[in-house]
Image (cartoon, rainbow, N blue to C red):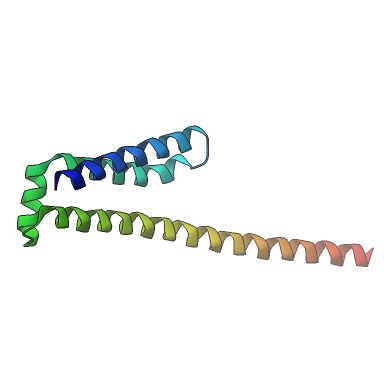
Length: 116
């Protein structure tokens, strides 16, 4: 169990550093990095706080605390991926609206040029 907790700790720190370096190099926007940083902090806290993990596993009815950790990790990342899916959907809708507006403007310009 300790090896799993240590591995999750290392992975959460690596995730945190990767997000911070990506923000610094402008590969990811700050508003999107907050979700990933929050996820890595949650993982770090859960992997380092054995009593909290035991309490959560008791509340969930699980006898093996690392199973609770893996369940919570999965839930955190599903939440982050869902949030990013919503953002991507909004961006796609905005791109469609911009393309339609551009087509209308081009059509109007073409009509003006034909009338002259």
